[in-house]
Each structure stands twice: as C-alpha cells, then as structure tokens.
Image 1 (cartoon, rainbow, N blue to C red):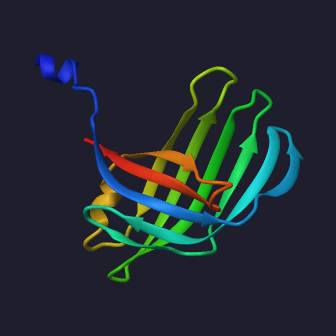
Image 2: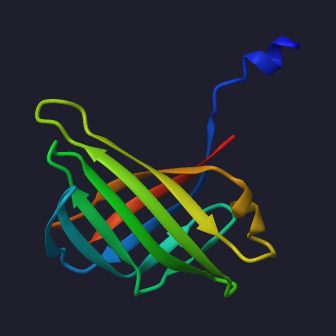
Length: 149
C-alpha cells in the first residue's frame, strides 16, 4: 500500500467568511439534566468573505448549555442571505472551555447548507470556526469560518 494513503497530510485551513452576528439579551431557560440552559435570539448582522457576502437574517437562535464542569456548548441555527439573494442555512456547534488561569478554547463545527448553484460547494466542505464575544461594547459575536483543505 502506498505510504501517502497510510499517512495523510494534516489538514490546513482556508478562510471562507467572517460574520458579525447581532444578538438580543440571553434568556434563562432553567436547569436541565445536562446543565443550565439559555437561548440567545439572533437579530441580524453581516458576513463577508472572498466568495460570498450578505446579511445575517433575524429569527435564528443560539441554544446554550452550561455544563456542570464549566464548559459551554452552543448550538446555533440561523440563515444567511447572500448579496445575490441566495438563502443559506448555518448550523454552528461551538465548544467553549474557559478555565481559570488557563487558555480559552472556543472552536466550532460549522455546517452551511446551500441550494444547488453558485454556493453548492459549501455542502461539500468541512468548515470550522472561531467565536469572539463583542459584548458589552456591542451586542454581537464575531464568527470566523474556515474550510479544511
């Protein structure tokens, strides 16, 4: 068997887009069996990248779970409208570990579902992201999305 098949190259990343996602205040949904639950309504925003740009549509939400070990799991579902009118659905699942005295870990798996056409390539890529909270200065988060290449 060829060596290349047994030892694949590690993935690299290529920038896809950055989104500034505007959010409403977090709502407490109470404690569940897995931890404390919250929901953050998504109210709008913009996104921009080399091959796509447009607006973040209001109406989505980020469901958050604060686990007993302090780790936060975010599960956001929302839509983007490209400047040429195409609707994309984004499912962003984030894991945040922010231990006292330790480095912050905040990375996500991003799935973008596109219709057939100029953005269908997004359906065939593994996308990963980073998350930066811009609050309290601005009621928004910055999400940077990269594809594995």
